Figure 1 (spheres, rainbow, N blue to C red):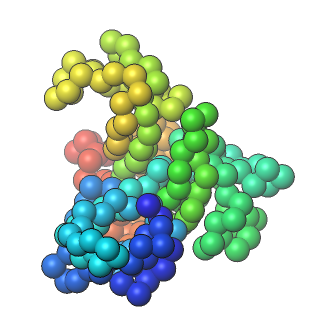
Figure 2: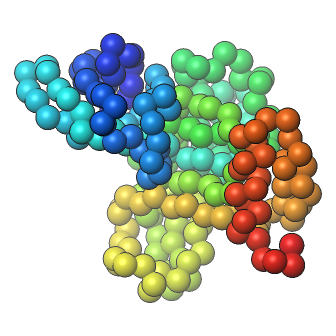
Length: 212
């Protein structure tokens, strides 16, 4: 469900208690309680009943993480990695005009049957080494597959399970190889004044061939 508040953590109007021993992950990576925020979509494993729940683990899952490719102010929509994001009524977004094409965002929200995502939270992030897509497989062939219409080139025979249509998947992909100016962007980013931007740039460069 969606985080609606913090007493402990309120999810879909249910209060779930957590502590320092609760395992927190964000898109599959180990994280911490301080990374939880109102509007995030999470999955919780908890013990308890009758309104008294204690979380064993909390998993934050973003619908999509990557650069904005286009914006439609009239419809209050943005497109990220080919996915249309409906932005209106997002609690932490004050002005649509603050977003620009090329900005990186991580989007929490719910996907409709037509593939559109209604956002519950959108956060700006520094350019990263990887993009993330969570969604449903709607096409599979020998050269790859599609997730809600976004093409993923991959040798599906090397996957540990057989991909089928309607299967829910999370895709992490290195992004720098499809950006013609990625080297210039990363060179600038490693000199950025913000330490998190510098760290992400260094991580992205770690995936580069030695000749880069």
